[in-house]
Amino acid sequence: MKSHSTQRIRHIVTGEVRETTQELLAEEPLSIRVQGNPYTVVMRTPGDEIAHVAGFCLGEGIVDAVADFGTLAFCDEDVNVVTVTLTPERSERVPEILDRRGFISQTSCGICGKELIDDLRQVTSTVDASPVAFEVVSNALDALGTHQPLREITRASHAAALAHGTGEILSVAEDAGRHNALDKAVGKLFLQDSLGEARFLVLSSRISYEMVQKAARAGIAIIAAVSRPTALAVELAEGLGITLCSLARGEGLFVYTHPHRIQTQSPE
Image 1: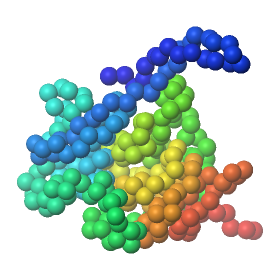
Image 2 (image 1 turned 120 degrees about the vertical axis):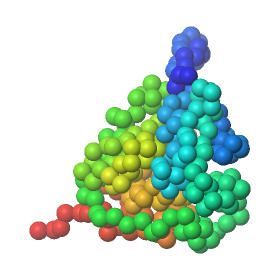
Image 3 (image 1 turned 90 degrees about the horizontal axis):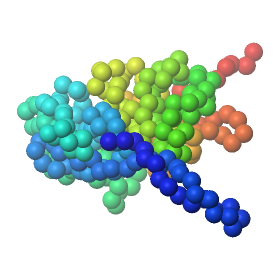
């Protein structure tokens, strides 16, 4: 399946009609089955399905480690269906998550920030990490566009990138959905057992509370985004020990929580 397709359109300029074409971002359903049962269907841009589901399962609390998977594969080569089985030991530990079809996907209904933090602490620990230089985070945000070929073509995709403390991009993914992009980027490193090398996350979107939850499950202590976070995201990040920052219009960064992790040069 293709990540984008060509569409014939009309371009109207001051009454003049022109025929042209545009590349549009693809969006297709992906069915995720866990332990033989339908778990969820997400609308995503085709590509990186196995990494997507791996990152999704980590974020939802279905798995904590790659070793928790029994199998992770396409269903009869259908790229729109991915099946997951868990080891017997893991399956016995997460029956409630499987019964209610996930943790993160079910916490947005009638729950306040404090309850959300308390619930999330059942499946993750408070995140901690050493500081990262302001210039490193700022430069990574500025350079994110160079890692977005789909956006260059379609002007429609979100991106998520995981970076080393030096600013080196370790994993990046694009998708129509910002949550999917993050799951894909996380899943790539998770499957390589190298998620621990990532020090911060860079997003092309706003920071919603779900993005904070997913970062916490991945052990990422710093999130930097092009757009501002929501109020609930800030409350959640404060409680989970995660640093949130966004681009300041003009120059610099706005830092909303745990500013000690953004290392600035000491005045001489």
